[in-house]
Image (cartoon, rainbow, N blue to C red; front, side):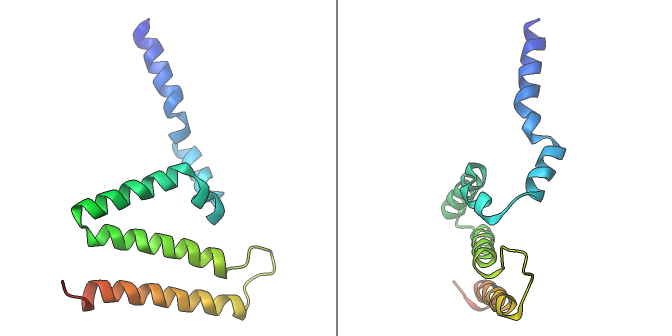
Length: 112
């Protein structure tokens, strides 16, 4: 009987990680909720710790890209339903080019 109770408790603990729940969470994800979500913050901190300890340039560049894109989307794209305009699209495009330029510099130009 104890084994069945343990299995049921484990099933209830893992229920939020079902595929349908994860997909629904990602569909309704916004930049503000991503920044304030403790799961995302914890994963980013663990990845940053790993990248610093192992000196992984790839993981650091992934973290930089994710943070830069979150900030770029938050500050350039409109949140209301007015749609995309030239004044909101150009900063987004040039910000994306700047992120790409930094990544190209880190991988192809900079030597250690």
